[in-house]
Image (cartoon, rainbow, N blue to C red; front, side, top):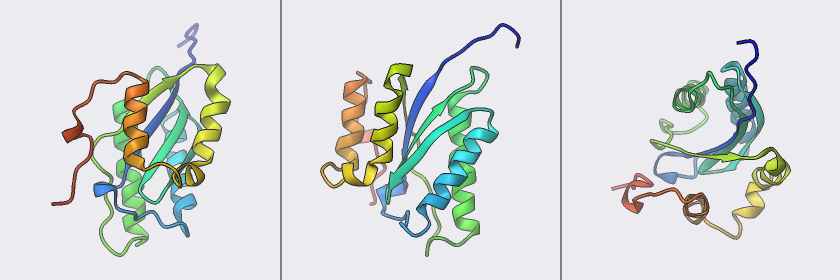
Amino acid sequence: MANTYHQIYLQTVFAVKYRNAMLSKTWRSQVFGVIGNLINEANCKTIIVNGVENHVHCFLGLRPVVSVSELMKTVKAKSSKYINDHNLTPERFEWQDGYGVFSYHRSQMDIIYKYIQNQEEHHRKQTFRDEYIGLLKEFKVEYNEQYIFTELV
C-alpha cells in the first residue's frame, strides 16, 4: 500500500521436536538456506538463519501484511517437508510445536546478527533451554515452564 512505511525486525527461535540433535552439520546450512528462501518467498527479508543441531534462530525483516504465526507455520511445515523429502534424517523429522519471537530496534541489528552467526560457539557455554528461558526473561515474556518444551516420554 502506498504511503505505508515500516521497520520491523524479529528474531524467531524454534526447536527440533524433543530438542533432539537431528540437524546434522553436514546438511544444516542447506536447510538454513531453505528456511531463508521461505522467509523471502513470504515477502519478508531474511537477514540471517543459523543454529545448531537442535534449534534454529531466524533474524528477519517482517512486512506488516504478514502474520508472524502464518510465517512460522509455513516455514516450519515446508522446511520439515524438505528434510523428510530429501531423507536427511534416519527417522521422520518434526519441529517442536510453537516458537519464540522477539523484536529489535535497528540499532541492535549488528549485535543480533553476530549472536545468531556465532551459535555454535555460544552453545559451548550455554544450553538451548537456558538460552531460551534467558530470552523470555530478558523480554519479560510470561511463560509456564511446563509448556516451554515437549518432553520425550
